[in-house]
Image 1 (tube, one colour):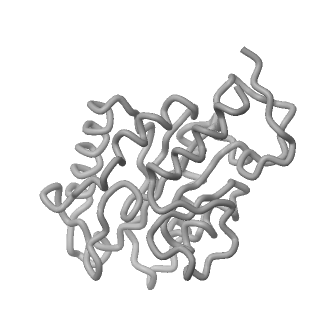
Image 2 (tube, rainbow, N blue to C red):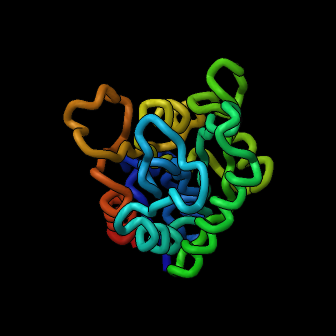
Length: 204
């Protein structure tokens, strides 16, 4: 099958003459809280008992697996830096999350988390690009120009754009969200996946 892309596609960018291996994108980068699982307002998901997948999130990741080379999660988790949870707690959450996604037919190829607080002024807390650089160092085939970031906040969108990715902002009340730089918008991850998979199918 030969995949054709329109040069001015709103998500894929300008590399229209290089369809790669037939997948829609090199990597889909997903924020975690508010995209994959329910965000706890004013607090952190401190353990697996507090982790709740958002409706349709597991199926959405399974669908994304069909059209992307890699699925990577990038997440700020300042609860670790504040002493509210340990790195072991965070790693358990991510191991269980990855296993649940796999059981649902999807795949997460890497989870990259920043444990620092804003006061630490690190280079990995989004919108800084350190988590993306960590992902590329671990998965050298990551091509930011052929990648997409899906997040629910302005820091996510700024992170994606700084690395040259296309971006989709998800979440309720988007008509009032001060984030004009996102390339696309959707109410949740399943609807964002509809956009991405539909876009790929139109070019198959």
